[in-house]
Image (tube, rainbow, N blue to C red; front, top):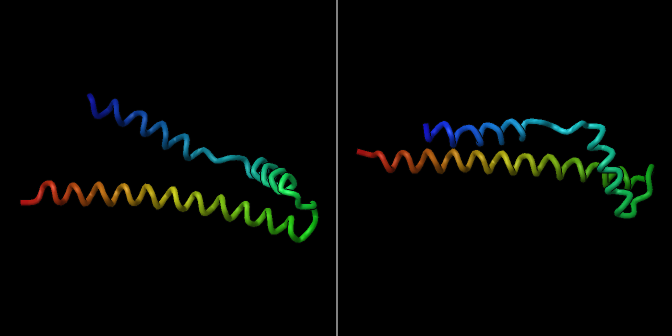
Length: 85
């Protein structure tokens, strides 16, 4: 029973993390950020700013996934050494 009580919030967090934002909304937010940084729309530097915003978002996602993988590996390692014969 106690295990299922701990599992429910974790599943809820995973479902929330899977919900993705609307690509159009992300683009508009990126455009607003680049304009706020002083880039002029329709310029090469503005396009580069948009590209960097997208790359930073992708890198953040990869870093978060690597963090989950690291947690899984650490959990497996502690299990293996804890229950060794």
